Each structure stands twice: as C-alpha cells, then as structure tokens.
Image 1 (cartoon, one colour):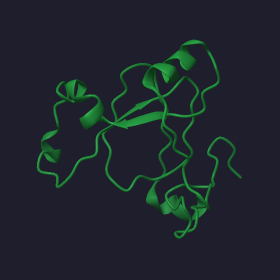
Image 2 (spheres, one colour; image 1 turned 120 degrees about the horizontal axis):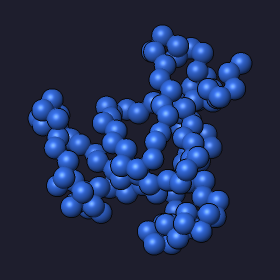
Image 3 (cartoon, rainbow, N blue to C red; image 1 turned 180 degrees about the vertical axis):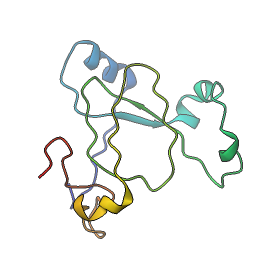
Image 4 (cartoon, one colour; image 1 turned 135 degrees about the vertical axis):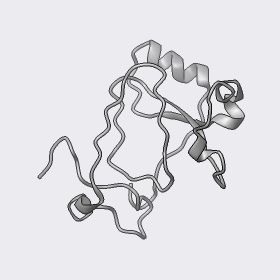
Amino acid sequence: DTENGLAFDTVRFADYVDRIVRGEPVATYLAVPAQTWLPELLQQVRCPEYCRDAAWTNARFWLGPAQTCTPLHRDVAENIFVQLVGRKRFILYPAAATPWLYSNPIRSALPNFSRFDPEHPD
C-alpha cells in the first residue's frame, strides 16, 4: 500500500514451491538476489556487450505461479528480462502517457507504482 510499501516475508524455497505444486493460492512472487542465491545460473548468462561496463548490476531471480499479476509500475534501472518457463505479458506505455497512468505521489511508499489498471482502463 502507499503508506507502508511492499510487504516482504521470508519463506523457505521448498515451502513456496510445494504450495504452487499443490495448487494452493499464491499471490506473491519469490524474489531473491541471483548473485548469492543462484550463482550457477548466472554462470550460464552472458552479459550483453552494452552492459559489461555498467557501474552496477542487480540480478534477481523471480519465481511466481501462473496468473500472478504485477501492478503497473516503472523500474528505476534498465531491465533485461529472461523467461525460463511459461510466459509473461508486458504492457508498455510511452512516457507521454504518464499523466494518464495515475502514479502514486512521489512521497508515498510506492512512488514507482501506478493506480491505473490496464485491464480496466477508465
């Protein structure tokens, strides 16, 4: 929420996967730093030439069940997205559409998130 920000919790990887396999409702993503959690996966990824001299990188491994939806938002850093299994739909808007996407106030706990619902535009 805009007052408290994103809710984070700690969960064992096996417990999270078990919930998905059992078909239990899971409305969250599992997100972990790839450098410390899955270094062997990063060894398989070749960094694009234009990123090799970047001052910093922040690789994350995200896992989520089917039908998980991320609210409309903008990321501060540039992204390279890799989908290992399944599929994900992205809805991209040009910067000129910003006034109509109802961004949260800059001093809110979620300034990069939008109150606009692209599935039900007004």
